[in-house]
Structures are given as structure tokens and as C-alpha cells.
Image (cartoon, rainbow, N blue to C red; front, side):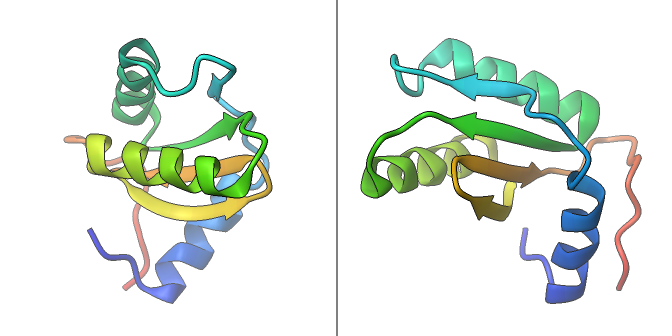
Length: 97
């Protein structure tokens, strides 16, 4: 799903006060972590994931893997925080055009 700049700005504003729902630690991206991200996306649509990776390349690989496996949209990556959006069957967030 491709988001327009206006839609990304809207989602960033909604994500600002959120706390991270899932935290990826020293074990990296496991099946259990992916399952938790799937559940969180299904329930909330918009989530933050904290990635505790030391180097930038590892973090980017983890971000790409999460986006690919969950079919979610990467709204924003700031520092160690990833903001993901995936519309649920019953949408809670309405996006601007």
C-alpha cells in the first residue's frame, strides 16, 4: 500500500503520542516477534516498534523484513523507532485523500 505525503503526515501526527507496542531485542526478528506485530496491527492499525539494533544496516534490514512479512506500510523510522500502518478489516483510522 502506497501512502501519499499527506496521509503519512496524518499518520505521523496520530502516532506521536503512542508508546512502542513491540520491542525487538538482542534475539532479533523472530517468528514470535512477527506474530506479536501481526496481532498489534490487526488490533490497532497504527503501531510503534522499538528496534534495539546497534548498527544502521542491521536496523534497516529488520525494518525491510517487518514491512515485507506483515504487508504493512512503513510510515516513519526515527532513531530506533519504526511506525507501521496497516488498515484492518474494520477500519478505525480514516486517511485523508
